[in-house]
Length: 426
Image (cartoon, rainbow, N blue to C red; front, side, top):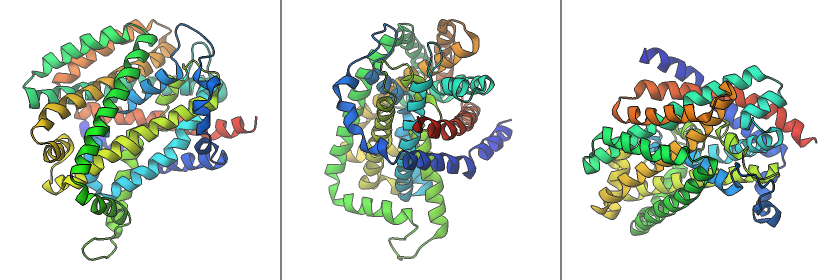
């Protein structure tokens, strides 16, 4: 069964989808005349900083941004970068940057449309699929895929990563990690949007700041290797061998393929998940919420992913032929010594916990659209899945979650292409 779904996943996430993501991202940037890149002054405008609707249930723009960033900044931003380097070499990082740059156009457009078409009960891609494309059926398909992705990529895979990380470093049984995490998560998400927004607006800036400071410390300690690391990123992106000076077409294709896919996965631009959160933000300015979404890509890929990559390259840990969390831990051990074993695993666990919070909100919005039932039912099931994910093997879950993500993108991308051009003409 795993092989069957793996084959489906490979077809869905083939070069066609990644090419579509990049092409529509480029279209959004060009069609807006790069306005989304030139308008960051809006972010400090007083009229945008203030909330406009004064409702008790909506998130502030900052809280929506942090909750959306929490959904994106899971273990993939640390472990996923290590895998990208292992599979695609240092050049994969350059193509992650390319994917992120074009992804900024995508996430800007989807958040603008989310704010423009939202209603009292429908947000994000669900709203603009239903009221922009006038396709309630497509909106329901998207919602089904979103709920599936929330239980897979946004839940069980994250709790599993938490459990494995804490078990390896502190010998904490995975079941205990799952139960405690489920209890803590329930306290937060059953408290409603305001509590979720408050927690993520505290955790994400603090976690990201600490992680970046530690990474910068390691890079500074290994600064003699920094120029070589940066040179390797640009040379290997185009298949140039540092030894022979020759060009390898195979290396170029591998770097592009791995880098672009990891870039798309790291910031989730084009999947529609960001719009679900920004659509509930307490602001009446679509362009402002689009810029908030772009900040997520900057923080996610250009800062955290790049910092992880430079730590691995500057410390020389990539030569150890390790992969995933072990590779990142090895790099941090080189840079920080035994202190790394006490710092990195809890940090990975907390990043995963933030992802659980963010995706619980996305999934609850989609669940309510499908059933008109209270989100409490979904939240209860979501917390139970956390405990289950901590103790089970997840190869099939990962594959099904990837398929759900691909289906979200296939629903979302045509809507962005058709509706954003219509929106810009108004």
